Image 1 (spheres, rainbow, N blue to C red):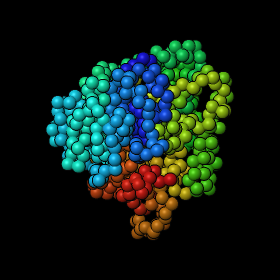
Image 2 (image 1 turned 90 degrees about the horizontal axis):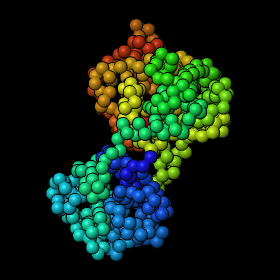
Image 3 (image 1 turned 45 degrees about the vertical axis):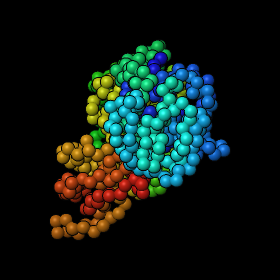
Image 4 (image 1 turned 45 degrees about the horizontal axis):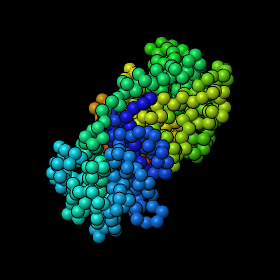
Length: 514
C-alpha cells in the first residue's frame, strides 16, 4: 500500500521504536531501518523525511556507525537526534569532541522560535540530554537555533538543505515539548499530510487480504489475546468462513477466560468464521505434573500447544494461509528492522510452520505497534474488554504458580486473581495501572482461622505502572483496596491464609514471577 513514510535510520539508539511511535502519533507512517541499509533501498522508499537516531558511539572513532553523504543530497528533510546530530555535523565538515562537561538529564534549553522546528515551542523549555560528546563547531551552512549553558549548539538548522539537528532527545517524555517539535518536523518541514489513520488501515488491509486469499483456506491460532483477536477479526471481515480459528484452552487461562473467548468468536458470536475450541486442560496438567523449573514449564507448554494445534490442523487438511499476530516490535526486536540487539527470536505460534501444511503466512499487523493494534481493534468493533486486555504470557498461569502445577493450584490462583482484578476495577484503578495480577507462591505458612490452626499457601499481589513494559514501577495501591482484597481472598479462596503485596520494580525484578 502506497503511503507517505518517514524513515528512522537507526544507529544503535535505545529509543528507535519510541521515535517511530511518536511520529505515528502525528498520523504519519514511520518505519525503522538499520544504518547498514543500502542507500538505494532508502531512496526507493521515497521518504517524506528521515530521522537519524541516537547511539552509544563517538562518531569520530574508527568503525563508528556512519552513512553515505549522498543521503544529504536527496533533497529530503533530515532530523539528526543526539548521535544523529553529531554524525550529521561530522560528515558535513563540522567538529565533534569529547564534552568537557557531560550533560545528562533534564536541562533548560533556550530556543529560537523563528525556526520551523520550534514553532509554538516555549523560548525556555526543558529537554532531555544524554551525551558525552558535543558539537564544538557547526558544519558550514548551519545556524544555531537552541543552546544551553554548557552546550552552545543544542540545535542547528540548514534551511536551504532542510537539515535539522538536536543534541537532546525530543522523543522522550522528559522533553516537555518534544512531541510538538517532532510534529513541527513532520508537518512544517517535511510537508506530511497526516493520513496514516486506523480506519483507512483497516479498510485497506481487508481489501488486500481479500485479494491475496481469493477462495483459499485460512488457519489462525487464536489465543484470545489482543494481537491474535484483532488479526482474526480482520481475516473474518475479509474472507468470512474461509477462516478457521483454533483456540487451544490449556487450562492455564484466567478465570472464565476460555468462555469469554468462545462467547466472542464461537458460533453465538458476531463473526463469520469457523471456531474450534480444544479443551486440553487434562493433557497439559499431566505433562506438567511435578515440573518445578520455570523454563522447563515454558517449553512443555509451548511444545504441547504446537502438538495440539498440529492435530487439529491435520483434521482440517491442507490450508493455503496461516495467520500470525506478529506486530512491529516483534519484527524490530528480531533484528529484522533497526539496529537493536536481537532481544528475542519471535515466532508467534512457536514452530508451527514446520508442522502445518500451508503455503504462505499472513501477518496483517506486522506494521503496527501495540497501541495501534488496540485502535484497529476498536475500529473493527471488538469488545473493549478484549481490546484493552492486559498483557498475558503465553504459558499463562503456568508461570504465575511457583513450583509444581496442579488443577487445585490453578483454581486457587484463578479465584484470587479474579478478586484482585474485581477490586482494582471497582475502585477505578484499572485505568491507572498497566498490569495487575495474583501469583501463587510456593510458600506455606501457619495461620489461624475459626480458632483452628491452618498450614496453607500465600498469594502475592502484583500491580505495576509502565509505558513500555521494559521498565516498571510497583504501583502505590491505596491500602483500603489491598485490605479489602486480602480479606476477600482469605475468606473466599480455599487453602490461602496469607496475602503479600510485591513492592519491587523492574529492574531488579521482572513483571512476571517466573
